[in-house]
Image (cartoon, rainbow, N blue to C red):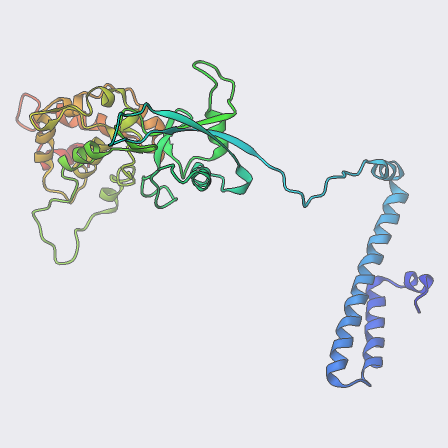
Length: 362
């Protein structure tokens, strides 16, 4: 029964059925436990034989129909490299280093080169930095959620402000340049803290002024009504918050704005001069909220010092670098429209009352 002629006189399916029946009749004389074991082993081996027969028939049919292709495949060189051998993908990172020396003279900031195998870490820049931190535990950076929600890992990578957890290593390699004006990709990825901000240590900037500016716009709901359960909104009213509430206050937009570099940290008579794109986006977020009853007061606060808003020159770096793909420049433009539009019954521009504002935007 094991002759080659017998096997090829039947189809694989017919042969499998015949041999399974034969194995069942032969194994019935065995004890029950041994019967099932032998039956499973025998049928699995027969299935393997059937699959091999099908493969042999397909190969012979292909050879008969396409002899040239068969000869070409047979003469193709076989790679000697094993698929189990791991390939390395080394990438070099130029990381900003600085730490305060309280017991002596301050040192100048430096950069340090680290080369790691990116096949041994995740695909994002944050994964690479954590891998570097395993090599050099003295490297300091902020991180928390790894999902682009907390905004902690904001830094300047390859010359662009972004979140390290949302920036892939491949994208950073594409953006890296060898020098000013050169479009040749560099093999070194520069990593710096957010620009024009005081540095606490290494990649950690001091955002104290940024948070004070954010607090100055009172970023919380201020309503005269006290509902029993919750403040209700229509679908249209809620839609006006899209593109505003997603801001994670990472400060990527503000630290990319030249106007913020010039006057963002300037404080005159206890009030900041220019609030910056992120804070103005948050101010507009609460002004546009239909549940808030302090629209007029919020606009008056921005009008008291015109540089809080009008120091923006529409450069729009903020909208280009936002890792959440928001448009702070658009929010600032709408704020300027509100400030420059006279209220009902007034000849000059003045902060609008809530009702007038809702007629204009909502």
